[in-house]
Image (cartoon, rainbow, N blue to C red; front, side, top):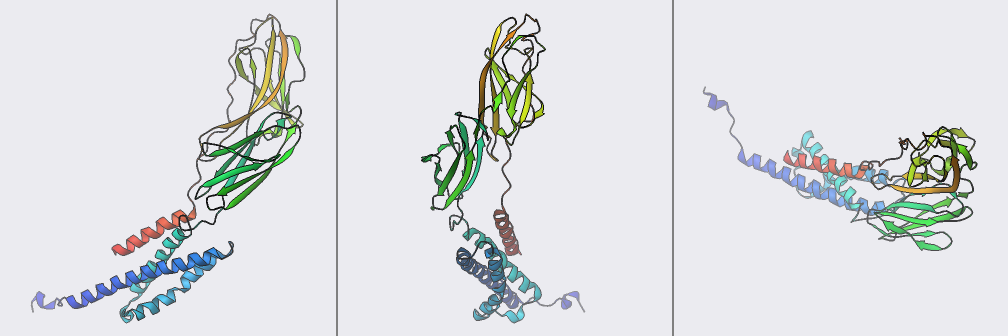
Length: 347
């Protein structure tokens, strides 16, 4: 017997019938996934936040039973289905549902989320009657319509580079409230407090007859910032950083000497002391900073030739810009779902 006699005849009619059934099943599974996603979207809107993910997921799984009935009603011969075809149809339906459901519960189809408000007060503790800066990063998936601050009256916050700010000075602690409203009128509120004290930064006294090695101590209250800050002073047109020298009670102690540039030998030197508080919001490279401003002090130096010779110290470890957080689960789920749908279609 010839080998050709062993090859079964290709049944074109059966092949076309099988491919039509597969195509019809894919289309029905796809459309059914979209319909269930729409139903879940409306259920989602009316459910409590703590249970809606779980309940919509269970509903989507339970709806697989309806897929079997719909295939029957639409004259798909499910008797010819094997395990592989059933699993393929269910997977195609499920990931279609997941992809469209995630799309339907996010803008532009739906917005249930109020703005997110992240606030920093610079400095956290300020000298009385000096400005404290309230800086708020306010984000929303459809856009922020307005941001107001209630602080001895309601005021619009200033917007710059996507960040809102407001400056205020007082001689006592005072509460504030930020209200942010998005374009769909969802509202978010943040409440905080401004703190003002005397002697947030100071030097104990003016001094005379000091030489290049004389140690000058600058006292700074610890809680002016949760992050590392910079202490410095200005003298004769120069800006000199002070170096950390320990702590005592509620204060950090910084030190400097007349050996740094700007100081003049055999003369009266006036310095004004500062603390710079720095903050970066994740995803924003802009530096936000504010200053605690201290008093002016006088120091009379001797004719020491080492006075005014050194460069200002370099301060390391100050805050720097941080990267934006990674995308959330929803975006990841959409990408995976569509990838699986495309893979299934190719098969």
